[in-house]
Image 1 (spheres, one colour):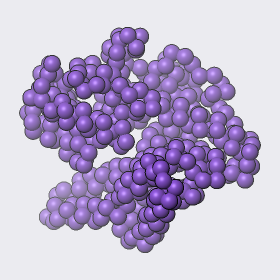
Image 2 (cartoon, rainbow, N blue to C red; image 1 turned 180 degrees about the vertical axis):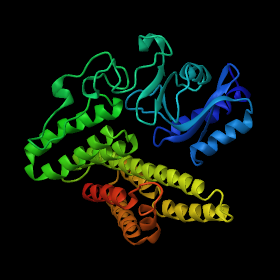
Image 3 (cartoon, helix red, strand yellow; image 1 turned 45 degrees about the vertical axis):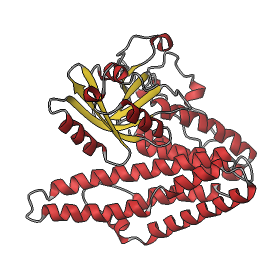
Image 4 (cartoon, rainbow, N blue to C red; image 1 turned 90 degrees about the vertical axis):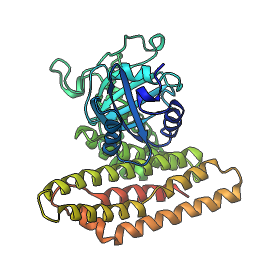
Length: 375
């Protein structure tokens, strides 16, 4: 079995961070250290910074890649999903070997467009040899995206009804080629039909959220799609009964984490473009430092406090404590909304000439949905 010197980090620490990723994705860097796959995880640093640490640790590292890693316990508690900047043939199989001893025995590598580049797992469970690489969405022997199998190479095609459920004439159709996000959106739209039938006044709200998610999937923007789908799931959960239950608060937590992650990624891309634009300027480094300081203040103000508070609400068993925690969560939302409406840095980031971002719009939409849910 490979040790920390071979794979980049101690197995116990690797297992701990993978466990943390069940609640929120962690940054990751991977590559080949000789015949072993090296992996390094970090819950604070950005993926590129983690990759630099891994390359510093292994100067001869081949095919370095970076991105995020997470374990979706609802779907498969043995599966580690890595979303990376680029694919590398055979990497999933090697990572599976490096994960031995952590309790995780399956690996799936996705690209930033949401497609599955490589997948491997327990041979007895997977029913297919390691290293099978499904085709990217929308490129199956010339077929268009609407008729193609989804990005996870499932062998059973979805029916027409599953691809395009409807909630009246205005309901969005659901493409069948975007893997796990498409599956979640399809299920959510099915629930929209029932929700609108029971309460027609919710049609505009729910259909708008579903349409936003679908548009993001079609545009190849999985981060925005994940945020919109989480908002839709949270709205559906909140409308199920007068007082939100534990599952509703859990959905709300996921929605905020997904939205904050998208904003963080957008700021990271903007910072890269900003730094590149001023790389030859005499005060370029100073401008880059100043930009990062201002952007960090935005992320610090729109922090993970809400996610932690919603986690407390979910676990609360005493009625009085539950009510108090819900009120605290609402106060945090109000604080975030005030920051978004008044912070000049957010306005400046949204109006930047380098990379299109919409921090105010994205976060306002999510917080509006959560405010209605948390009652």
